[in-house]
Image 1: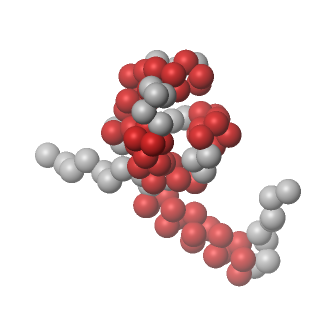
Image 2: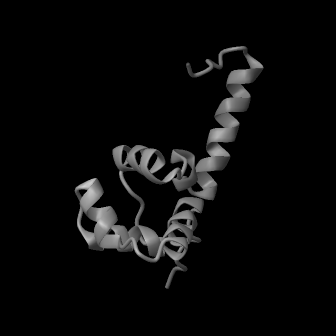
Length: 95
């Protein structure tokens, strides 16, 4: 059997959020985002990650950066792409 991947920084931040705000529930967040509570639960335990538009919403609502939902492998690929873009002067700065 394969090992479960390590939870992303986003999943860990979401766990911390609920630990620091015990009056707010997964049901509250699910309702705010228009998803089922079971989806939020899967994000918290690291079984799944929110879709892109929900990552943006979580950033706006809870301050969890979109990039925090990337896996270690995805972060590595992103660093390589950025380095390659920097090497040829092709990187754009977001406005």
